[in-house]
Length: 384
Image (tube, rainbow, N blue to C red; front, side, top):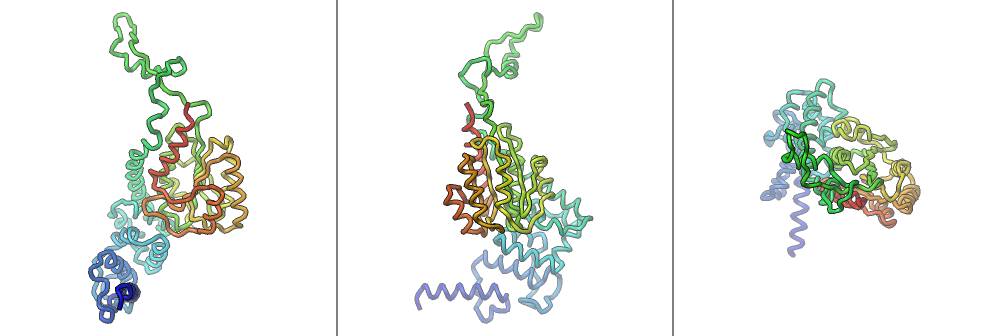
């Protein structure tokens, strides 16, 4: 048997082993041994489908009678978020809720309070927010707030250079005209020359700044797909939108959509409020969201539209293509993201993305830093 055939046989054995559980080891020869990732995946599957978070012997489930798992619900949640793609996580977490183990965790405020804030737990709580009992909501909200605060601090510090670059609105300039005089900084830097007896400030050095052009404030329209599979991108987008909203040279509009469109601009500065206001799941009408974005365009060449979606359009593709083409033809810069985060792209509709890319609309996956750099380049392009 050739080496390629051997590898195919081992791969088939590994797949069967993950499907049937530990009791299949006697027939398959323990094909997962030595592969730490596959062993962790098997442990997560066993914890859910062997035990359904119940203690004690398994009751006729996959892999019955082979001993209890060492995992706890909170560590299982974090592990699933790390190891499984979005589509699999949604199914597993729904199964966990149906088998009552996850529901038991959500119903226990003390258990929620013991969970360590993390991006994975944040995404999970956002996805299952509708299943959290009222008694546990305060604990869940505190956990979400802590995770958002930690992520926001790290992202804001990391993204500041990408957004402002070396030519921010307060940069010193050699253009020494009255309109560019930075009076406040000039006074501050000359305070050592203040004559208290005479009440006179001696100015030895004038400080000037670069002014933004009157119309250089860029409008950034973020269209955020509320589909359940987009939860990781939704979390990142909510935090990133708050950072964008704090930049003086950006006029942010945050729009969430499924089959309806909801303008969240008023709460965009509070990512926790955004996450609690989103309605994850449901259908998707990209054409309706893009149509709404068109109503927000006042100066096409000073408008950026970022569409974050899995591009699984529920309406007519022709209508979506027409509306995107109209924006591009008018001079609006449009970017499509199938994922926003460090995990890469999940599933998306390649037929739709292909049709939009053919119009000249860039489509891909980005990290928050990459998106901030992209926005920053366009914002700084409006300076004079």
